[in-house]
Length: 151
Image 1: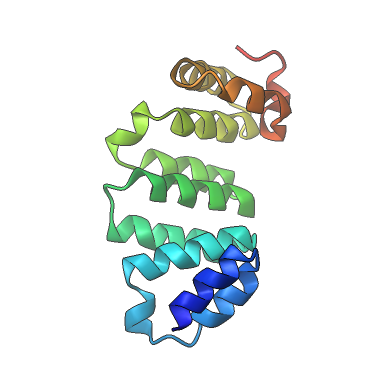
Image 2: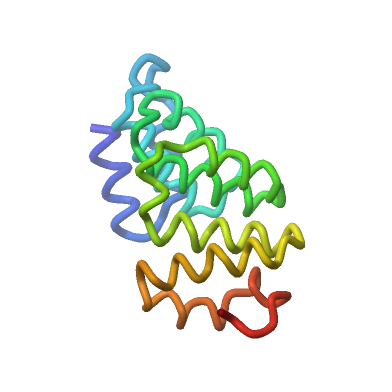
């Protein structure tokens, strides 16, 4: 019942209420992959980056073959201000990530913030070759401002 209510709150755009619904569930239920995924969605929507980074990293440990968990963990870490950890966490992901445009785009963002501009541009070129639509996002992305002209 609580899980259904949490989903309902998320659908209404109230992630904080969804998290309230999930909180009283027993720990053995809360650590199930499906519940962790639901929690992660709510925490990210609520912009609870510290909690979301912990949840995403737990999901990475539960399913190390799932690329999306590593993308989410890195993104949440970056949002907490720990961009170096975000970069390291993203690079720990499965090899399947290397063929995803989002992997290269996010890595470019993290590298740009860390001041590694030539590596950032290289990953941006790869991201754009995999998904040209990311070029439009890149023009407005604050993480990429320091790069100057985009590749």
